[in-house]
Image (cartoon, rainbow, N blue to C red; front, side, top):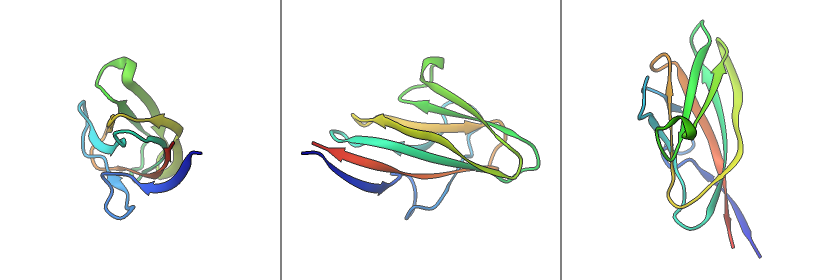
Length: 113
């Protein structure tokens, strides 16, 4: 029977938002998946600037096949990653078109067999 536990993002201090400083690949690290369990990733982003900002997530690499792009509206908060499963120590990173105005926060549901 599988077990589920809600966990902080691995690069977050006590669940606090992660400020995205990177403006190009390789991005600011957001989470490193568990080596053997599956981490179901749930992420929100906030944009503190007065202009919309494109936010790019990199899943396990820096190629276009590893990227998800979202636009976070000015002075907005939104759900950006909805339950994507990752495992095998895959790193999720992010970069934004503008430095230090986007914050990412969330959690993982850790699933073990």
